Length: 89
Image (cartoon, rainbow, N blue to C red; front, side):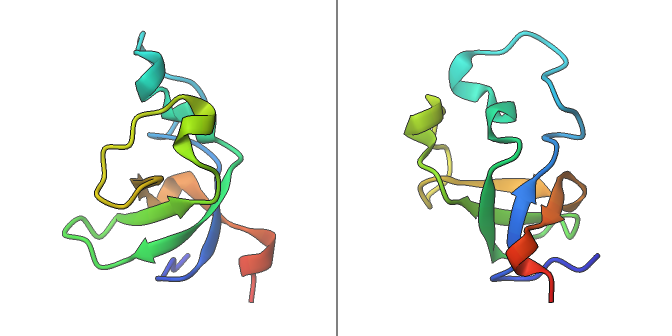
């Protein structure tokens, strides 16, 4: 599956799982984003297996940290993503 810039996506897993494999802080529980939609805003990363995703919902809604320069975005493995129904061409 090719996932390019401007592709609408939905997060199906995070780091390959549905739940964290160890205890983590609430601010770092990005598994809360599973099922959420967004759009790929950068597909030209050094790690070709990952893309930068801008999520539709504000991370503050989920009590999550914003670590990236673009608010509400995360670098995500392509295998953790599925095309959003609106992104199927």
